[in-house]
Figure (cartoon, protein in one colour):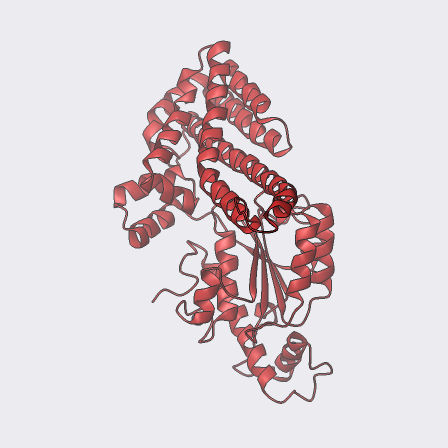
Length: 427
Ligand SMILES: [Zn+2]
């Protein structure tokens, strides 16, 4: 039976660290159920008690490496698709596991992985940032005693999207954590732009690496039953992003969108076609995003209207309708923010594909002994590399990366993409 860490592809070091920590956390809980050790000054602080118990225990076979033990705050870093949130959820499950350290089948593991465990909270920003209101409410709830008698776990996906005020609210909780509360943050890196230096200094970092194409392909074959040749192509094209590889292997529409993006380089023949290509890229991202949020938008709206008694004729229905306008407006605001985020994510995926093409052109021009990202456009990239020489291929690759950075820095996507297309055409 696969345990909770089975979904983490190519992350052996991180998994070993997390298993040791989960074992250490389980030891804390076992110790808490025994009479308090005489050396512990503050029996409430289980982690402090464990640290002291370890010291007393020194030299025996059961000694836990001090660096491998449990701690209150963790940051999972790594490139997109490396499995930051998968790792955080798996570790949360291991902490709630009632049989061991993440068996994958007990109620603790199961409810954590399906998102229904009472002591595991997940914050995943749907908009472009996580606000202070949301963070304060979370910190408050995280301070309560775990109802299951184990740990209160708070997972913050995209911790790099915390507003400054939200970061400060979180910092207070991380600095003085309640004894049984564990914070699991996910961020691209520990660069100060992603995570504040003060929060970073309170956390243990678990770096995840970009899994190799071979490791991703193995998972697609073994776990998803995808044919080996399709799995190898999708794993290479997805550049180490497991979820993206799975989508490319399974979803014909995702493949079509990728084909359209990779057709861009050969269509850039003038200013007009460059601007047309920019429009097409933006509109495709908008359409993809609209399709991805349409269903949840409609469901949320219907649920809110039902809750507000829209269409009701009983006493109080008129008053409810008057008060509901504000709530509907709030919902629309949240949905608009989520749609913007979905558009940016879709556009970013397209830009990563495009960057892969120019990277292939560059490595081909340099005759570098590495496999192409996009095997299906490798011949085209090679022709481009010969025509442009390494310098020209590098300038084009940089134009794509600059476009990503500009959009991340809040330049209007259309302006950034038009500038990129013109650079790609001019070379
Ligand atoms: Zn379990």
